[in-house]
Image (cartoon, rainbow, N blue to C red):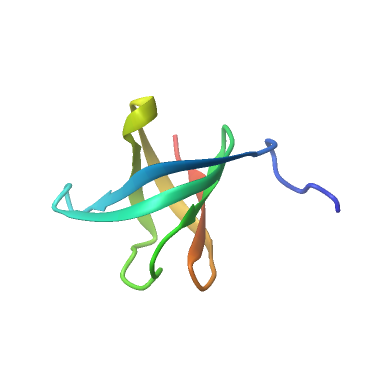
Length: 82
């Protein structure tokens, strides 16, 4: 299988939070893989998740602005914005 990503992703299983609306809306997620440029997130449902949000990974003290690049049944792929 060819890798087409800019940066290789490493598999992991960490809890995260999708925040938007100035922090007033929070959706729990699981970070399934992560790289310097993006991540794959597992969610209960991608419905209602906006195109842009902040991913919070409290265990790593990270707050990452994201843009959704793909959506599947219970997963979304995001690109980190500078």
